[in-house]
Image 1 (cartoon, rainbow, N blue to C red):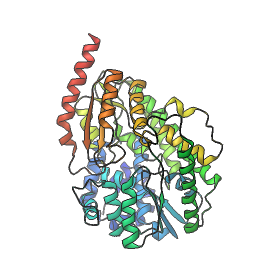
Image 2 (image 1 turned 120 degrees about the vertical axis):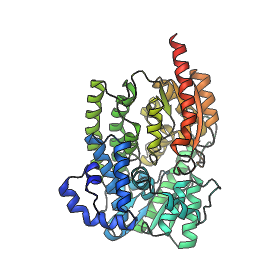
Image 3 (image 1 turned 180 degrees about the horizontal axis):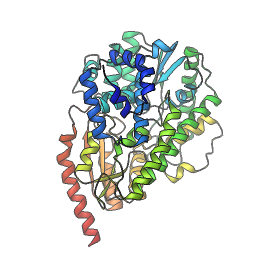
Image 4 (image 1 turned 90 degrees about the vertical axis):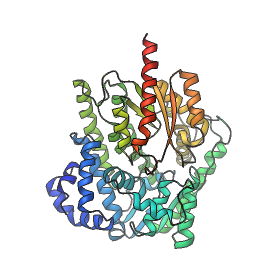
Length: 466
């Protein structure tokens, strides 16, 4: 199989391709990647990502390496532990991943599958279908992430783990899917529970009960990881994970600010998907992410200085409450209808995030920070965050694009739309899509509504100028 061009587009040097080819061959065989898949991937990478930029190629390379690592996790490690998005349990794995090289800790489906097998190869249909016949039937609003999670493990695409860290806090579907794996296939699962919406709009002053409850549950999960892997989960491990996450996130903010202030928009948001999905994810190649972000910031600044962009100068600016990494065609479609998307989803760090925490316990301070910055922790926080990001970046419109099968995001889209229109006086639209499953919501289907909304935003912007 000739995959040289694909890996060069993903930042691999010829010597690195030759060295890694035995591992690549095994991974591609296990995932059923064919010559036709490779040709399609080359075309998609060239079409949807700014691969003329070294930083983008490096980021694509990181995700390729992560996919190969999960394929070989059992071959190369004595223990395997998974913790998919969403879930604060990932924070424990973020630090632990540096503690023992002989233990694989990662999020295999989110996002190695979604970015590489989805965004690059467009090869997720069969994995989704396999999950549908294993307790998560189509038409029942099951999340595509968990359909793939179940299907990939049961069908042997990825190794059966020694432990799954599952979340019953942000997402009840996670716990349901992992309960199937635990009961039918004997895979050990530890559940992270928590509290949401204890009182409406109690953020940013959080209830102590919430913080202490989730903190205790996190340490309980940590003890289970210790029991299975032998890795000591303590303050030092937690500190290392937070340092890695913060380093990535705050470096990313430089790029967010460049994108938000530029006119025209210099690169597609599909490239930023590659960074955003690394922030809260245990990675085997974390240091390469930070290096890639630094490189990309310099390249984007040069594009801004030269006045180059992917949309016309003066194009209406809209906030998109999503990051469809599984389907970069969505970003291409947004640009083709003449809209700039300077910011999206959780790009903005609200000022309250920098307030000094009253919690001295490291875990409690971490949980308080997650509640404070994350809009998915409560409906009121989601509304306040989306209004805040639209106001902070002075956008001309908002697209509340939400995955219909997501419990956290499917509750409040209409409330967010009303709040943005009432408080900021800009157009807003609610558009549902498949999230991790693009079969029923391809970009072409979304285009008609987006074209209509783009015209509305242009008219509203022109009226304000007049």
